[in-house]
Image (cartoon, rainbow over all chains, first blue to last red; front, side):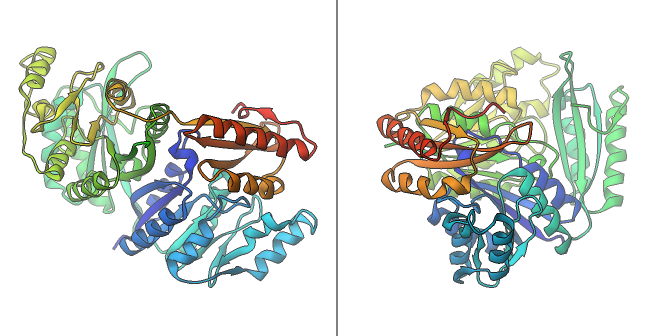
Length: 250
Length: 250
């Protein structure tokens, strides 16, 4: 069975429109390749009650919960404390992390605010941060990472090989200068024959204004994906247009 | 009181990593300006049970629910049917929309697949689509829009003036070449004095590698935001660095 996952983006800055999200796609792509099915993403504010309730709900519903944001040195960095409360363990100084941060920053710079980054839920396993040392952590099925994209990526790359996934998500795509309304009935027939796959239809517009559509088949069974791909090819071809493999260049 | 909102992004293509989200920030910014507080975003797959349950949950919890995706002509465009079921009304042909689409597309092109776009929940009010005619719709507190960014934007711009918001979200920002760990204790004191505002600290890195931080105060009371801004200025200044107004150029 493919394990399931939920991603929680913790940050007022996404909800206010200040910041364009730059983490969802990176994590989604990595999980798909690792054979872990990302089933939901939630963006929630830096408010303790909301974080705790959402972690409790989502970790019961999915095999893994990944979080980004809220683990720095400032007052609104409350993710570690909220995850500790959601799991039901105390937050405490993680001696190894404390020593590592003190050595990296120097005693003088390692002030009270920065010491917050050494407090982890009891029993947490640190996730290495090769960019700025302060780690993320895993506790139970919750994986807590930074929100700054370069740091999140460093943590995610360290974490991912430790997780057990299923077969990777496979996909095949064909595109053509046709409109999706023309292909829709044929595509529905193919979806009907491959209930275990997700068949998607994505309209696009080229820089010169010509419109087209990409048809994509996705799933965890490689041979089924290939069969569905052949059916998609035949569908486009039957409408008198030569299908082009893959998706159009952006 | 500021009305609250939740945004549902309906689409496997975001969860699989195929597509970079290009809708959250546009909607978040528009809602903030209109004085509607975006409290949560959820990205969910094109699966009927998930869509129905999420709409039922979120429309009870927030004043408004906005959705994007799943209202085109293909088999995976099931948002209208799911919203009808979540609200408890039948899905039926919307005569005016049917006539408009038929006139726009011509009888021959207006096939069974494209006719799906004229089925709306009973009682729905169409949201105009100036790009490709097939409308979104509002029913009760649920606002259903397309997923293609240009079409979503057309619908959102038509919809927003019809919604009653509170005062717009105000913000003030100062940045400096300091690290957030140095400012964190002072910032926490300011947050303590302005519990009604969100104070955020956002590290950045310039193209030449120099690191800095933006401090941002946000809220719905303009005078409080201005006062907090003055305190942020004084905090950075007290550390011997001249604050620069606004956020750094990306």
